[in-house]
Amino acid sequence: MFGYTVIGAAIHCTDMAGFPSPFNRGGTNEGLFDGYDEFVAGHLPRPGSHLTAHDVLAGIDHLAFHRLTCELFEERKVYDMTFNYNLARLNLDTRHPNAGYRYARDAADPSVLHAEFTPTTPFCPQTHTLTIGSFRAWNGLADRHEFDLVRVYAADMHHQSEAINEQLDTLAETYLETGSVEGDLDSIGANTLERSMDAETPSRGTSESPF
Picture 1: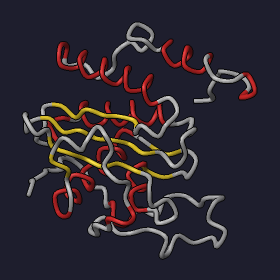
Picture 2: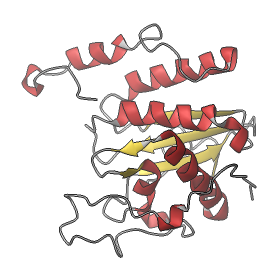
Picture 3: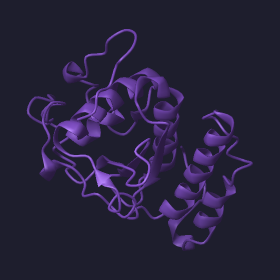
Picture 4: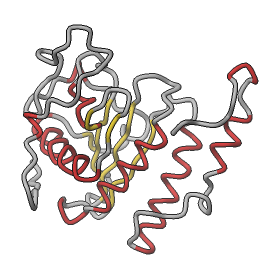
């Protein structure tokens, strides 16, 4: 079991109601979310290719790190703008049981954590923004957890996962070299996404993303 320390003003993730969502026809969130103290494997994405070779977190270990994730995402404003809530809540949203984050401790280096994000759909336009925001939250606030590096990945099911993961990998290497989580996306291959979208069928429309 891991021990995580939250420093500074407490954010009560278990009480976070979020904002009203147009996807919630009943007008209330009651009963739609699992609790931050509940590990419900059937409401979480299965660990994908980036995690299976490592020690996947489950039960109390998963809950401990995900509770901290809620704190860090709230501080850094890593929000899903479709559902208008802290991205950590996606794991708890019973309407999307195959979406959210899963984690695994590196099998060879326990100071490294792997985090794989599965979006709600293969064409989710926020995946690029959310994974980079997650990387910056976890590694920019590294004094709040025990890991020297949290590597982030988009799950293979996303249609641009290869291009997104290229950027995330370069961000991780830049962080290890410089200690900075920002990075210049233009200089580390941001146009990879543009090339990926240009290769898609013209019927999909413009290659520009609102995110």
